[in-house]
Length: 170
Ligand SMILES: [Zn+2]
Image 1 (tube, rainbow, N blue to C red):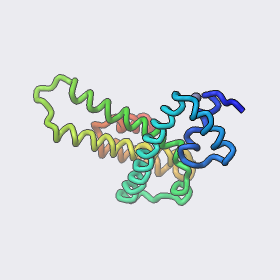
Image 2 (cartoon, protein in one colour; image 1 turned 120 degrees about the vertical axis):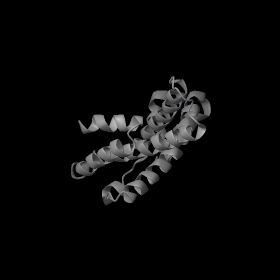
Image 3 (cartoon, rainbow, N blue to C red; image 1 turned 180 degrees about the horizontal axis):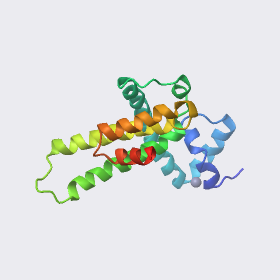
Image 4 (cartoon, rainbow, N blue to C red; image 1 turned 120 degrees about the horizontal axis):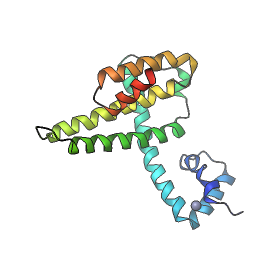
């Protein structure tokens, strides 16, 4: 059975994550063998999933560090689809902060250490934001999510994630 790119695309996240049935999996594999476009998407997706895994784990660790209780349901959550998006958001965040740091006319050139600090901060803030967004999906963890948005705004005020978190609080 011939499949179109569109039919394949929505299965790629599960394929990369090894969650497809044998039949679906071989259907995707057959399509990938003859389609470079989907192979490229898969490669990008795999990179973003690896990063997403790190983001998710770090997010949980950071939440524990600030003593935010993590419900079991959230721990077991199939985060892959959600965090694939969060990972790409993080990449945009990181690159935008680098560009702004370089392009903004400042009296003093930022030192490399300063740039590094900002990248680290915006990364941490983006991870927390991603975790909070996940919590905000459930009614019984909404309050925790809100606390976390406030935390991001307070702790990382200069980051794009803080600006996002502020929008979520309103
Ligand atoms: Zn294709």
